[in-house]
Length: 446
Ligand SMILES: Cc1ncc(COP(=O)(O)O)c(C=O)c1O
Image (cartoon, rainbow, N blue to C red; front, side, top):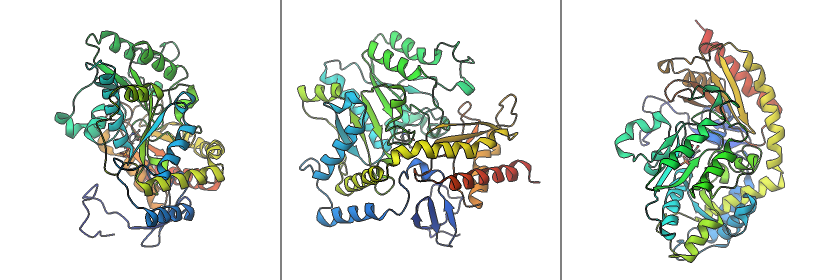
């Protein structure tokens, strides 16, 4: 379908259907085609499309007060949403924690970088500024967030613009970058953080940021038990802040309010976005733990940072209305059942000669494609297998989220599924069937 020429598109070589409406797990395009949104767009649509109560709450807020600048006013909607998010956060954050709202995941992670930096200024340790992260990770597209990200393809063009604060290896047992095996490895990838912090003689590291389950870059790769706990321990020992990037995994996506809850680890900050307003409005933020809050309260009292649209009343209304839907329909609890259906539907794909793995947690699932199943050898990047599977599934009306580079940053193809929490068993089956057919077309069509 030809597009009008006003928009700067993501890809000039691609045509984009016009999306006109959404309902439940489905998006309808202008030509009448319906698409099953099995990736929740990009792990955004937690409650489903077209929920009237959310649209109504946003309209009411917009007609009552569309905007008030956060340097001059707070609003009841923002206070309410902040309290509700704190109530969902790990226990230590509930007492004395605060929420900093912004408009998305990248802004949330930029905010976390600056919070970490200023926290140490408040504590009279101005030498600490680096935020260490992991290779094979994604924290956002703004320059600070990109500097932390380890997604090679997304970083590549901007290399000269990005400071290097230090990256350690990811925890990805299937393609262990250290060539080791769990549990004999004794979590050697986590011990890289210990070594880095031990060697940091200038004490320049302020924080460590990680995705508890790596979303886009590794395709829903969860660490083995013990890893997240060990990372938390190392950060404590070295007085370094622990930041969990839960932009993709937070707000119930993995079956708990936040993914760190699976391992009972209490970070100093949790960044969130995507599902927080389920796509109804731009919304992200940072849940800031009491230790960081106190340093600001007792110190200068002022955070040298801000966005015009932080605490936006209409986004706050959307966030509250989305939480109402999650509560009323008990959707957090539903993730566990829906996850069972999803993995039951995807399970048979594991037998396919070009499927290397089906993995994930809750309603975040990754399907990895391999050239050689026995050796888990990936396809060469140029073959763009993930992109081809995406397109072939889309041709059958099912939307997935394709990425390349999961094996070594360059090669490795997977598609991610992150459907709305309301997905039915039948819709899980439709998604799996479409991927199976897509594989037949991509791998075996002559
Ligand atoms: C883990 C993670 N962090 C941060 C971001 C950036 O969020 P946004 O695109 O809303 O800026 C993303 C987006 O995909 C993400 O998956």
